[in-house]
Image 1 (cartoon, rainbow, N blue to C red):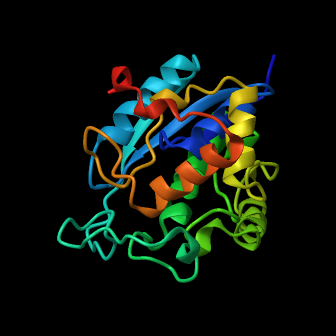
Image 2 (image 1 turned 135 degrees about the horizontal axis):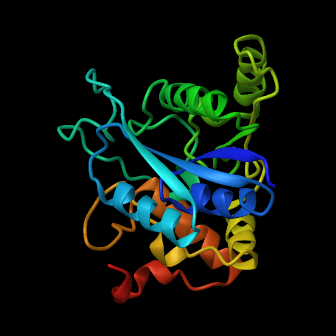
Amino acid sequence: MKDKAIVLLSGGLDSTTTLYLAKKKYKCLCLIVDYGQRHKKEIRLAKKVSEKAKCDFRIIKVMLPWGCSSLIDKSKKIPYHRSANIGKRIPSTYVPGRNTVFLSYALSFAESIKAKKIFIGANSLDYSGYPDCRPEYFDSLNKVFKVGTINRNIRIEAPLIYKTKKEIVELGIKYKVPFGLTWSCYSGGKHPCGKCDSCLLRAKGFKEAKEKDPIYDRQNF
């Protein structure tokens, strides 16, 4: 019998790859968070990813009414950068405290069902520079989790933290990740915008891995 694990699933490239890595060793339950993001497409596709992986999922709604991020406040424009400038300063797409909020819910879920791990698809190499995606953040939060729970063995795992997007794509190919069901773009249109940080980083990964991104296959929309 496999130990249980909670996987924070956004339906994106990184979290989906993380799910497929985790389910090799654990019985995974996916936690999908509706936090008022600009579009619901990623939630819909996260459900499809969970079903494809044959993992149960829960969707929770979290209110962040103070906005202050262009991923929540539609009056703010999504920033576009050149690839070389991504990560040099924190963009307006940063949602203050988002991972702390998500991981707190995941901890409550994990402790209630006696799960031993919480997986998150955070990355600290090819990313936009969000402070809650850094290794020292997860190291510190693991210490908090250890002293703040009855089950002192619940740990956050971020298996992609030191991997490039190229390496993540290569891992996904190896583990047969359904990339065609994933969504990375900050916009929720019929097709990815191809201009936001997330689109550019995704394109970089597929290009460097010399793989075709199946998200551009029309049958997936």
